[in-house]
Amino acid sequence: MKKVVVVIKPEKLTDVKHILEAHKVSGLMISNIMGYGNQKGFTQKYRGNELNSNLLPKIKVESVMPEEVVEKVTKDIVNTVRTGEFGDGKIFISPVEEAIRIRTGETGKDAL
Amino acid sequence: MKKVVVVIKPEKLTDVKHILEAHKVSGLMISNIMGYGNQKGFTQKYRGNELNSNLLPKIKVESVMPEEVVEKVTKDIVNTVRTGEFGDGKIFISPVEEAIRIRTGETGKDAL
Amino acid sequence: MKKVVVVIKPEKLTDVKHILEAHKVSGLMISNIMGYGNQKGFTQKYRGNELNSNLLPKIKVESVMPEEVVEKVTKDIVNTVRTGEFGDGKIFISPVEEAIRIRTGETGKDAL
Ligand SMILES: Nc1ncnc2c1ncn2[C@@H]1O[C@H](COP(=O)(O)OP(=O)(O)OP(=O)(O)O)[C@@H](O)[C@H]1O
Ligand SMILES: Nc1ncnc2c1ncn2[C@@H]1O[C@H](COP(=O)(O)OP(=O)(O)OP(=O)(O)O)[C@@H](O)[C@H]1O
Ligand SMILES: Nc1ncnc2c1ncn2[C@@H]1O[C@H](COP(=O)(O)OP(=O)(O)OP(=O)(O)O)[C@@H](O)[C@H]1O
Ligand SMILES: [Mg+2]
Ligand SMILES: [Mg+2]
Ligand SMILES: [Mg+2]
Image 1 (cartoon, chains in turn brown, green, purple):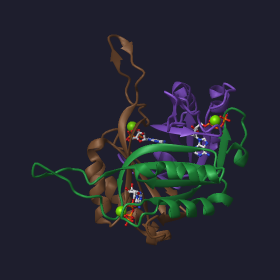
Image 2: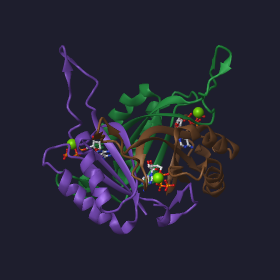
Image 3: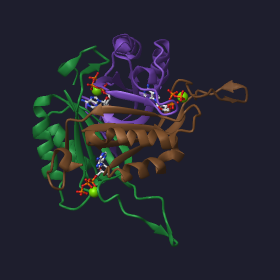
Image 4: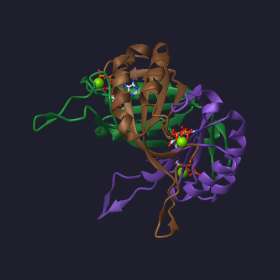
């Protein structure tokens, strides 16, 4: 099992949800975060003063899925979410050793 | 060391905290997230229009703990949090390679 | 690649950002969380009643970086953020298997 973390602009959330559903990926967690990538966001000025804000609002989508679907899912996300502009987002993949569905006690892929 | 992520209904947070304390697990991070599992939440209608919301509010509890306690902790959480209804929640376990307590510089299990 | 998670008091965020920039670490995600460590926060009383709040507001900074810089970055964070008081914060390090920049499709370290 892998955790796929997708960090995107808020307006791309619906696209990502549809891709996960199309691949029968069954669950996700969504958080509002602030962040920057290589451009360090942009620096805002307010009445001549630099604001302490190069942080941009982003959506973090975390979904634990079987290893077999990761490549297809991430390819679809890249192709759909990409605009070609800076800030299109990032995907990170990391290992998950166990999953448990609390209602049934199922574990592993059966719990996804 | 392992990171145990528990995603539950908000009203179950106190139960999870008590279980962690009972097993002398010393720390946690709590986030408000939105999510769905296999039921894809439910679709709400507002004045006849489908709302872009099959997302339900959930609490994510993340706790890094020694490997030895993971099984006992997760069993207790499953047994205590389970109601038998859809949406009881999920547990995910993943590897953590290092922990550092900033105050002392301690590392590994000593830092937990 | 490693994910470095730094949990700190909100007023230390600027320090952590500066250290990441000094080491040319190119991106981060910031979340507002609630948490406690070994002291289980403190227990507040309000009009004689214990409040269900031993949770303190913290900032979680997550940054995915090349393995080579992790030690230097975490040492600098420990040295800069440490006050010697309880609650200075924690650092957790975990494996990341893949990163993808959505704009370009770059993967691995090139995507960071
Ligand atoms: N190395 C990183 N670690 C953690 N989060 C990151 C990292 N890089 C980017 N992010 C998160 O992803 C969001 C989107 O990043 P972004 O798309 O700007 O990446 P980028 O590398 O700057 O690519 P681009 O050059 O296309 O803008 C950031 O706001 C940040 O929250
Ligand atoms: N595969 C997953 N990846 C990431 N988060 C998930 C996943 N599955 C569930 N979650 C998170 O856990 C929360 C609770 O899930 P839930 O208990 O409904 O799981 P489920 O698999 O649908 O089980 P049940 O059939 O008992 O409802 C979701 O709202 C979501 O935030
Ligand atoms: N084992 C843990 N798992 C997950 N999060 C933790 C853990 N320990 C601490 N944290 C997070 O880090 C924050 C800061 O922890 P804190 O600095 O109080 O750690 P501590 O171990 O109690 O060290 P100290 O004795 O110096 O206070 C907590 O509020 C919590 O959100
Ligand atoms: Mg960028
Ligand atoms: Mg469900
Ligand atoms: Mg403490």
